[in-house]
Length: 100
Image 1 (cartoon, rainbow, N blue to C red):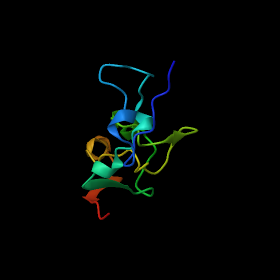
Image 2 (image 1 turned 60 degrees about the vertical axis):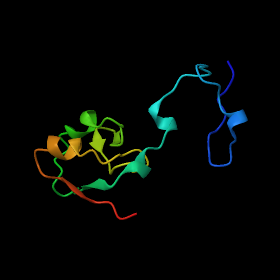
Image 3 (image 1 turned 30 degrees about the horizontal axis):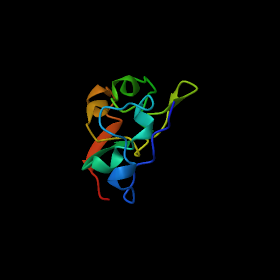
């Protein structure tokens, strides 16, 4: 299977995959979507009870869970949708303006 070229600012149209051609399976880890964000969730570890209700509702899998413990957000993939804050029953996630 042919590998898809890296798409960045320096690539020209001749190097991009022709329309309708699938070279490899896509997956969300390849596309960092955090640059789209205008608001972001902020994790308060002291309020968190590790119930893990926030992790499965994140559409971008930007809440890492390691050894049964929730870690801080991976902002490379978080789009700031705020679903995690609504799922948290302990107010451990606050949505704030993203100052990039």
